[in-house]
Length: 87
Image (cartoon, rainbow, N blue to C red; front, top):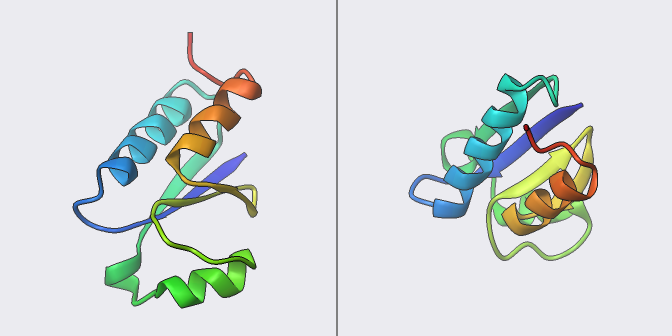
């Protein structure tokens, strides 16, 4: 399973999402993750809305195996629901 996190500099929830994905990757619970800085890549919220199919008001926006999960809270819940938390 691959996780992609779309975030921006200075976003505390983006940092938490990266930390969670990193711990999952280190524990072998996911194959890896990629962090995309939307400012550096020139990605707008409108661009993300086209991909996600609904309004985007916050970051991070997180995908697991190309399926949109939501923000950090939803990603954290996804990890718990699927029992991916490292021991």
